[in-house]
Length: 338
Ligand SMILES: O=C(O)CCC(=O)C(=O)O
Ligand SMILES: [Fe+2]
Image (cartoon, rainbow, N blue to C red; front, side, top):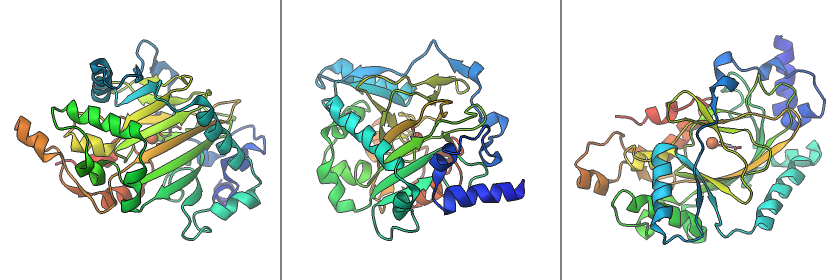
């Protein structure tokens, strides 16, 4: 058992073959390194079909119903999908095709991008979440493009992110989004290309374990395979996020939960691999500046008279804490609770 674990880690992590390399071996069962304890596997009986994540048509951002739907979804589900956002479907399809092309290259090509091989480059290839720190590995390879320069990021942001923030701030009866909020809500970012090869026993493992995102906001493009599950408001069941043509999935991250003093929820989610198909997703994590202090918005506390539920944190400290352990549900934000 021990030697088997050692070989898998060496092959997948150290040699850089990733889960893609394992999938190419046509294994009949997943290696024991990937077998999750019962409570972390998806229990099909806990998936609800009578509830769904709202799909919001954003073709008219000035329509109050758009703002209301986004704020309601962010309070109740922490997730929504947007359609008619203006990004052409061919562009989204090309990004997904590029993800396939990258991960389907031979290992010798891909390892040039490994975290420990690429020096100061922004593109980093990895597998699972935090190999070495997590107890069980996750059935996923990823390429992360990290933009950590606080000055450059804000100028290039797509207008969709600004519009969502504007709606969310106004939904708290505050002034809309402007430059003064950039370092706090929209500065550094990472784009993750996630690759989940088909898996012989998706019921035993996870593609991504239960977690909420440490970001302020996440924009996610998923393909047509499916497998993303979001914790339902009852706190125990799961809602599947169905692939929706042309849609982007938006979710509230821990930093917006903190800024909004818990009004908008950063909700737990997980990904289950598919028995026959490879899934790709592309996530953009929109973050505060690394040296930014983040705390519940003072103007919100003043206007409502409520006490802060979270302490001040330096985003860099939160970020380091997030990656210091395996995925563990909502435990990360508990760390910032007063
Ligand atoms: O692949 C997905 O659908 C979601 C991935 C995810 O939750 C993450 O990268 O934080
Ligand atoms: Fe996530």
